[in-house]
Amino acid sequence: MPHPAGRQMLHLWSLSEDVVVKAGAGDELVLSGRFGTERIEHPDPFLREALRRMELGPVLPANVEAMAANGDFGADACPVPPPTLSRLSHLVVRTLGLDDLKGPLLSVAPASRRAIFEPVRLAAQSHLRLRKDVSLTLEGPGVVVRSAASLHRVVLHRPEAAWVASTLAWAVTPDEASAALPLPPEVTEGILRYLAAAGMTAPARSAGTPP
Image (cartoon, rainbow, N blue to C red; front, side):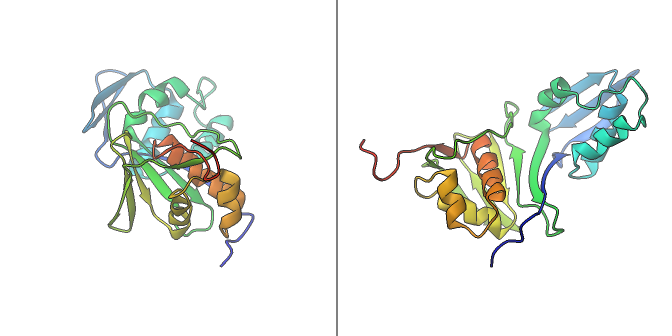
């Protein structure tokens, strides 16, 4: 069945389930998890609120940014603190969803302290496929994707994400994957971008390209 068009893509952030946020000495936040401890001195009010919400579950940063824009955190609040959030990448789960109330499409969790996640732009005509060592296993409510070459673990929560991942069994371009699936192109592209950023794909030659 074709997927409803016109849905907004949601890029959500949350802290890994094992991460605990506590007040440290003075004006300090301490984040502790299986990959160690991070200390943030003099955190901005925006960052405090963002981390508080992220500890509870996936959040849309734009919602916290809107509070900052309205002056809820004071005039000195910085709505987007990229250096700090980049430093915390190994503690953060990134989730891709749609505003259709059916749950997330997929989530990407760090599997190493060195994990850094940043969705990449994919050329419409560039071929890619799953890495040769990628494994897909049924675990809990979804399909877990792993690779020894990746510093992340991906969970495909919904069939749409599994459909897109299945196209990567062969060399395929984003345009070809979009044309083959009953999904809006932006949804297919978003899932491909997350899989690529998580290190689950590799460049590939098309079947008609000589070695």
